[in-house]
Image (cartoon, rainbow, N blue to C red; front, side, top):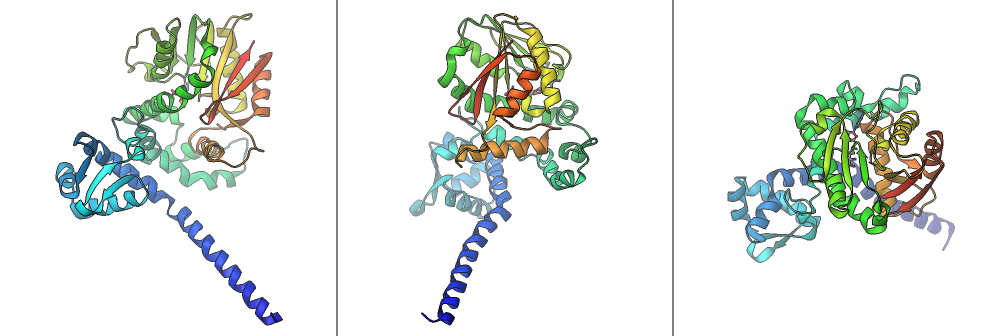
Amino acid sequence: MDENGSKESNKLKIEEEESDLKVEVWKYIFGFVEMAVIKCAIELKIGDTIESNGGSMTLSELSSSLNSSPLLLHRVLRFLVHRGIFKEEKATQSYSQTPMSRLLTTTGPNSLAPIHLLESSPAMVAPWHYLSACLKANDHENESQPFELAHGMDLWSYASANPSHNKLVNEAMACFARVVILPAVLQRCGEIFDGVGSLVDVGGGNGTCLSILVKACPWIKGINFDLPHVVSGSQEYEGVQHVGGNMFDSIPKADAAFIMEVLHDWDDEECIKILKNVKEAIPKKTGKVIIVEVVIDENEKISQLSDIRLMMDMIMMAHTIKGKERTNVEWANVLQKAGFSHYTITPTTSIQSVIQAFP
Ligand SMILES: C[S@@+](CC[C@H](N)C(=O)[O-])C[C@H]1O[C@@H](n2cnc3c(N)ncnc32)[C@H](O)[C@@H]1O
């Protein structure tokens, strides 16, 4: 090939690569479409309706049952079928559930719909528009935070002032605990609860998590500790006592403390303060704190789980004041400064690890 020929072939190769990359970028540009259409399907209860009608429905049955336009519904379903979320039988134009759509019904035992409804709610989407402004501010003394810029207050004050958002938050957290995290924790390290007579769940939300733990380990007397507006509306569970308070003031005493997906909402200084109060709440010689959180490994091979861990870190940046997902070194720092003498980290099959720390 002469020089001109080789230049031409290089140019074609670059153009081909760019064209593939453009498709990648289109996916990022329109990334919100998936979130929005899935939210629409959950709100319409498409999956629940198909499930309660024997698992398969024609377009006309579904549209009359949902009281929605068949033309619009067809387009929404065409998109969701293309994503593999529902299945379509072309000959009869009927739609059926898939394992994926079952995860997005509102009533399925393993439904993740509450988390989707929280993350796609206007209140949680608004802070993302302030992310770059926060990074540009570059003022560490008076860091402006995306959630505060969007709503004039932090997430927990916002939830306290808005009962419907409080419900969304608590249901999403309970779902995350029930469907995603606890099964993974109990599967990998259920024995950590052996011999624990009483357990305080710090920032335990509406108590769903502790109720599951107490059911799995009936010897445990559970204390569900969270902000007063969270526990006041919580359901009663056998073996679980709800206590309202502020973990920055003091934490009810117990043999061991459990703290799941709470410390990542706070900066190091606040974390140390919470952990010091946890340490006060457990016996010096025999006590332990069981922390369930993401541990970021910056050298980890790229995988779907590592990707979700990094997404969680971005969510912490958008939704909390100074929260973050921590690396092993960052965990060591806060635990040591809070006065814990040693700790162990056990990965689970989910994105979180179990960190056990001892006074
Ligand atoms: C991300 S949620 C985790 C809930 C629960 N541990 C779970 O994983 O399902 C954080 C929890 O911390 C609680 N929280 C926030 N500030 C608190 C405080 N000052 N004292 C006690 N709980 C607090 C919130 O109300 C919320 O329930």
